[in-house]
Length: 149
Image (cartoon, rainbow, N blue to C red):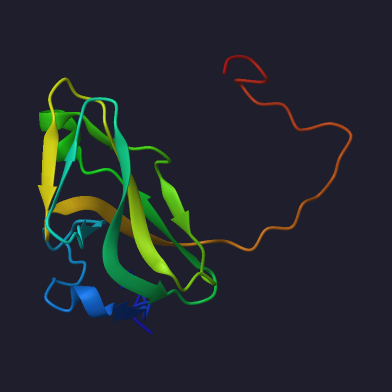
C-alpha cells in the first residue's frame, strides 16, 4: 500500500439532454480543489444589481456513500462583478440525484450577463465522517472557551 497517495473516489455523472454540448465539470489546474460548473442556459441571463436566479448546470451526479459535494462561488466572478451564491456553500448529499442548480446573486453595482457555457460556480467533493453524538453535562475546557462569535 502506498502512503501519501489519495484514494480516487468514483463519481457517476450524467449530462442531461439539454447540456450534451457542454463540458463536464473540470479543474482549472491540476491541483485545484474545485471543478468548474457551467451554465446550461438557453440563451443568456442578465442579472440586475440585487437580483438572483437559479441557474441550471445540465449535470446530475451520484456521489459514493460517505461523500458530499459543495457548490461554491468563483472568486473571479466575485472580485470582478460582485457575483455570489445565495446559499454558499450549497450542499449536495450523496443520495441526491437531481440536476445541480446554482442560486447566483448579483451583489455588484452593474448588470451582469451570463451565456451558455459560462463558468458560474465550483463543485468541491469531500468525505463526510461518520459522527456519533456523545451527550455530556460539561464540555472539556479550551483556550477560547465560549467567548466570541
